[in-house]
Image 1 (cartoon, one colour):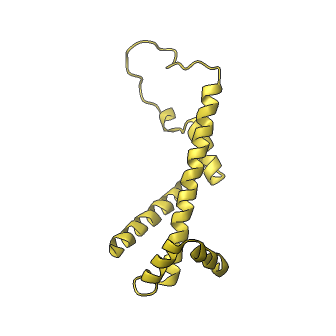
Image 2 (tube, rainbow, N blue to C red):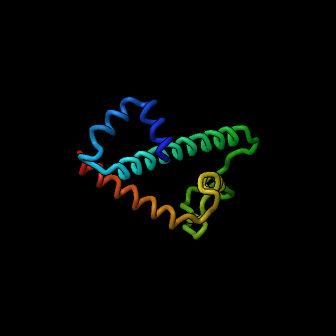
Image 3 (cartoon, rainbow, N blue to C red):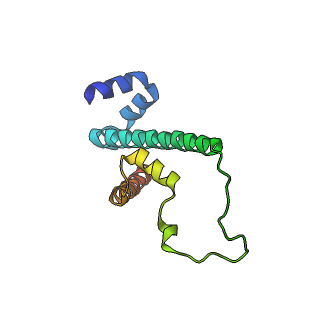
Length: 126
């Protein structure tokens, strides 16, 4: 990745200045770039998710189906059931588009752990 890093530093002077300030006095070279690429990937995934949600919202608006709350039109509260834990079709489409599969609970837990570790590291840098 050294060629990629060199081109990134040449293109982004602010990042280059930050790199010179932090490496190696405050953080190790590998840690700096691991964090950079992690947050770059996180921003990329967030942008992908926004695009997918915008596409799905447009598709939902284009559909001719009329929205209804269901067959019961009375004011009584619906009884909870196990189907409320099942992701909606839109949530499933987003998950498949982002992860390539469904059932990514271990991946989500690992991501939350990484985010927590990075938040701790950022607090230490401040």
